[in-house]
Length: 274
Image (cartoon, rainbow, N blue to C red; front, side, top):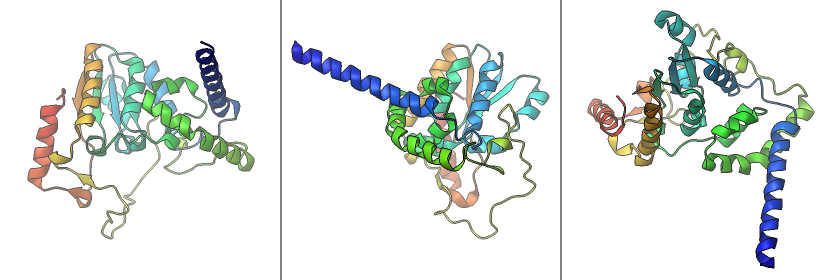
């Protein structure tokens, strides 16, 4: 019994130390990444939770951030439009869990994740998410257990990163241009002017850009299961879920026209949403 008590006491002490360390890293040190591109998820989330239903909800990667104008869509459709679309490096679980804070009957949810969501393991970037949330400890509740474990493992590096930034830039890490929070308005809608294409005229190198394998054999069942679980959650609350696809450069697609049609058909058959 004494051994069990000691082990329990050690466990509680270790847990308290971990929680204390985490709170110090998140809340104890001044926010340092509030100007970053990824921190725009905070504005998107605040706008999302404050929006009444029925509404349209977009979940996507950076193709949604760069390709959607939710303010114009809202004016054209005469219905509130919200977006939790910013970066594929967030993975798919994180934005889906964020959205559970305000899914109501009558909502229309558009899943337009990057193709890698279907083909690869969830691409949760602990550094990206930690720097995006920074001081917003309330948003950490959207992390799954597995994602939280990754974040906790990153906390020591996060501490050094914040301290180093604090010493060099007391007011936070500077950011400007399209990859900055200032590129978005208070709704998290990109307003940065982009008058022309920035892609090079030379042939695109697969080494420099993400290649999309649009072949049914590349679809992972665990990815389908994760998406279907979310779709069921939303449908049980009276929301309507549809699946869409982001634009993709021809040069970076692996697969013939028949492959692409087969890929789309496979998703249509396996996902529980149109």
